[in-house]
Length: 101
Image 1: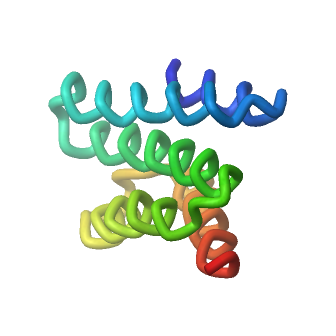
Image 2: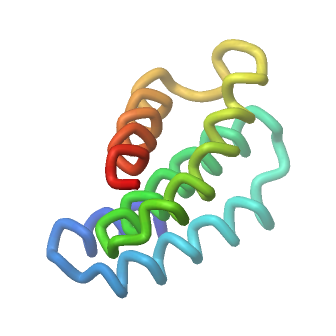
């Protein structure tokens, strides 16, 4: 839910609120999701939302720092732990953040 709220805040132009929601999404994903496969999917979604908000706020370095490890964890995991569209979105956001650096 926090991931979705972060994206909605970004769409409405409220970068500060998007950053808050995305941070909550990451904290919640780390604390509440016990199953490794589900956890990676949730973490990747939350990290993507946080990276989008950071990049939009002009903090591309921080965006890469949040998202690159999450993508690496999913890539190192067995196939199927994250949906292809979640991975594709994360990779797109990462490319865009790198381009801003």
